[in-house]
Image (cartoon, rainbow, N blue to C red):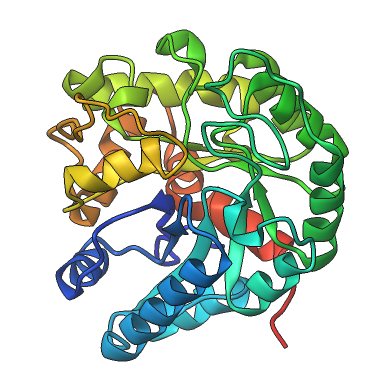
Length: 325
């Protein structure tokens, strides 16, 4: 990529209330590609319904977006001034207890899957469990199957032991698509230096989250503080393994947050389940290019800034996903 080539901007995780307006904002912000969450606690049949809805979105908004299956679709999106949408799952629930459904989901367009959300899954342990038992027997099988297919393993909500074991077990590099350094925000949802070091050793990628609960100073985090956070992360993982996974949930109602946290596994209602206010400098895809100011102001040079805003994700996706047939 030459220095005068058009900037590649890639957001490694969003779960917006999808609309034509949001897809138009992706184009206004120059987003080359976005990894979009399809579902959370849904089983296979409900997930298939969501995928039907996505096909409708692609058809109705084909002037703005396209379904992406491999790195070549990023180039196709650039050539046609659209945004490539990679589909992913934040929970392995859609594969149910059937290892064969991983391939079916891949054939239907799923390119990312987390081994666990907040809780224990059939594959591994989420960060909110008191005891992290690590990757399960089925988890080992699922990792091998995802490696075979080229489906990208995402460890964003995994517990410490599960994340470290998955990184070591996977024959392909993995991602933590949306999280931040734990030492800058005291939350086990973020990731430790130990995990980030393991991620770098295996050529993985970290996507920095812009969700307020993951940021150093919550909704009041400044753009400069974001840049300093990115600098500290880069010192551990290397700038070539660092991107953005904003976790943008634009226009989602609070009921969606309750679904994320409670699903159907609990009858306990979380009274405080409401989306926090986004920081003033990032409220929609139109604000994505402005992240460069925070990076440049805190010591990243132009080439490094291009990596963080999309270049690292571009390389990772190109190297990870097999060419679609």
